[in-house]
Every structure is written in C-alpha cells, then in structure tokens.
Length: 258
Ligand SMILES: C[S@@+](CC[C@H](N)C(=O)[O-])C[C@H]1O[C@@H](n2cnc3c(N)ncnc32)[C@H](O)[C@@H]1O
Image (cartoon, rainbow, N blue to C red; front, side, top):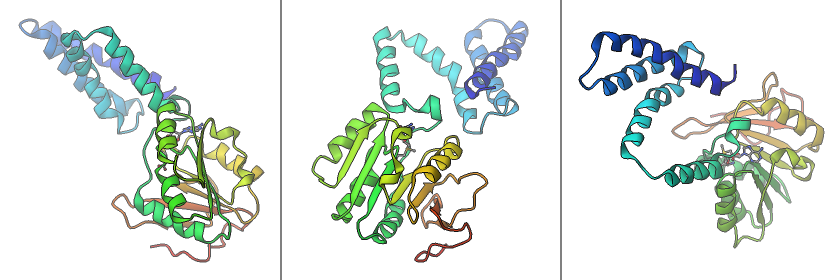
C-alpha cells in the first residue's frame, strides 16, 4: 500500500476509538476532547500500519492543526498560497520521496578532496537543492566545472541566483533522469533510498571508467561500495563511494574511514 494511503488510513482508523470514547464522554467541550483522542489514536496507528517513525508526530498533529486552522477562519487564498509554496519547494517529494535537505560543510569538504584528485574535474550534483554544494566547490576549484540539476522551481531559482557570479558553476531546471552522467568524472547524489537502484543502473550504463559516484547517506542496495567514508560531523554522515570499473573490494586510494 502506498505511504500516503497508509497515512490516510491511520487518520480514518483513529476516528473509530475517538468516536467510541465520545459516546461515553459527551459535552461540554467535546470537540477538543475528540480531537485529542483522535490525535493520540492516529499516532498509535502509524507504526502499526508500517509508517516510518517520523510519521508519528505528523499523524498526531494533523487533526489538531486542522481544527486550529478552521477556528482561525483564514481566507482561502492563504491555503492556496501555502499549497503553491509547498509545490514550488517539494515538487519531487511525492514522486521520488526526495525532500529538500542540504549537505553540510563537512560533506562539502570531503567532496573537495575527491575533486582535487582530478586534473580537470567535472562534477554533477543530482538534485542540487539550494546550490550550496555547487557554490562551495566552484569557489574552491576555479579550474573545475560544476553542474547541478534541480526539479523544484523555488530551490532552482535560489541556486541560480547564488551561482550568478560563478563562471564555472551552472544549474538547470529539470529532471535528473535526463542528465547524461557520462559527461562527468564525479557524480554526487543526496536523495533517498527510493531512486537508488534505478540511479545505479543509470550510472553503470553511462559513467566512464575511473569516474566516481558518491551517494550521501543512501547506499546502492546489494552493491558493495568501493569505500564508505564516515564524516566527523554531528549526524555522522556517511558517504558511499563507488568507483566505476573498479572491483567492489578495491579501496579508493587517498581516503581512510574515520
Ligand atoms: C536532499 S536534497 C539535496 C540537495 C543538494 N544536493 C545538497 O546536497 O545540498 C535533494 C534534492 O533533489 C531534488 N530532486 C528530487 N528528485 C529530482 C529529480 N528527479 N530531478 C531533479 N531534482 C530532483 C529535490 O527537489 C531536492 O532539492
């Protein structure tokens, strides 16, 4: 069952115990008691329906947030604006389950070292978000070429503005699946588990021998990386590194696991 259907099911199922409890309680103030009971039941139903843990607070907050918003009686245009804003930022989320979260400085610095290994680096950020990774690398390595592709309009626009002054960095609005990975010697992805199998097939088909495919946090299933680099940051970021054409057990020479 798709995740959105399970989320909806949790909300609907949670109405049953809340309604049943209301048979005994009743007024005064019953709408809020009902909302609280439904919220509690939805939070408990989420793991039972196999939703990941981060869905629990979302499930719990849904009906209370709805009740508060209805009470505020906001003009409908606000909801429309909210919807449009969410679409502009999270456009790819529903299709590929890839929300917007950003690589941190520790990751940028680790990528620096990989870039330095190439005489003329050509780097592609698949889903380049707000362009922070590209901007950092382009500033540090003026001799390299740093490209990004981003499908969400607002992050694309922000990154375009951030990269305006850099001749060696470029981001385009589009779909990562339409990029030719063969044009780059470093391909970086910070996506989600969902697209990894298909992305790996694409990398194998298109990337040149010796090129590096680096995935932040999400490993390619059933494929041993050339190396796993664990960064010394708060979240213990792991970079899964795959060197094209190398045997799975061969370690990339310059880096040690921390
Ligand atoms: C987790 S963010 C990573 C942002 C950036 N790479 C970074 O490391 O800071 C993933 C980005 O991929 C974008 N994205 C998801 N699917 C995409 C697709 N099919 N084509 C292009 N961009 C996509 C999302 O909009 C989001 O901005």
